[in-house]
Each structure stands twice: as structure tokens, then as C-alpha cells.
Length: 156
Image (cartoon, rainbow, N blue to C red; front, top):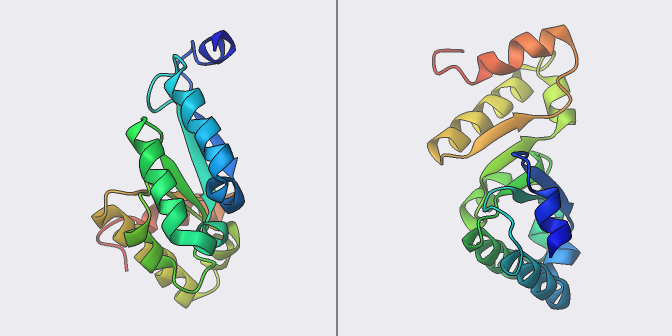
């Protein structure tokens, strides 16, 4: 476990992408939990992202694993949020710390009032649930100005 301690000696936080298949694989999740328990990793330094689409394939089992890993100090981001049909329902079923709003949805907000309101509603609902939101693919100056404004309580 020395290798893990050396990696985590600095103050960085690491986010690792996991597939739904990984979180449904009991052998892998047992290995992951054992590795975290038997290491010197400071809680909150090792965190995981899971794509919304892969999280919902086996929602019950994935949620159980996520809860166990959260007890070990790990946090979870739900990636590609906004691309699924029942996105908001998953927020109540999974122990999510962070939402990454899909870049394809973000890119549309400058030209589509509906997409703008959709993203705004994601941000506001997440805020009410104490979930941090991250907008993917904010690359244009217009988006750099527009995205933070969607989180303002007084924006229309």
C-alpha cells in the first residue's frame, strides 16, 4: 500500500471514472473497498465519476456500492447528467455529491431557451439537494459568461 500513500501525499483530489459494470462487479468492488480500507488514503482524496447511463443499468446494486464507498470517504459525481430520460429521479436514488451537466446540453443554452431553462432547473434542484454542479465543455466566451448566471437565484 505504500504506492497509494505516495500518490496521495500531496493535497490533490483524484477523480476516477468508473463504469456501471465495474460497480456491479462484486469481485472488483470488494477489491476496491479492501484497497481503500487498507491504504493511507485520506478520505475525500479518492473520488469517482459514473456516467448517468451506466448508473441506471443496475440502480439498486450500484447505489449500495456507492453508499459503502461513501462511508470510506469517497465522493461521487454523476457524469453526463441531462442525457437520460429520468435524470432527476436518479438524484434521489444515488448518493451523489456532484453533477456534471453534459456538454452537449450546455452548448445549446446560447441558442435554445428551453435548454437554458433545463440547465437552470438542474442547477437549482441540485443546489436544493446540496449537490455541486459542473458544466462540461464551457469553451466559448459567451458560455463562460452565461453558465454562472444560470445559477443566480434572480436570473430569468
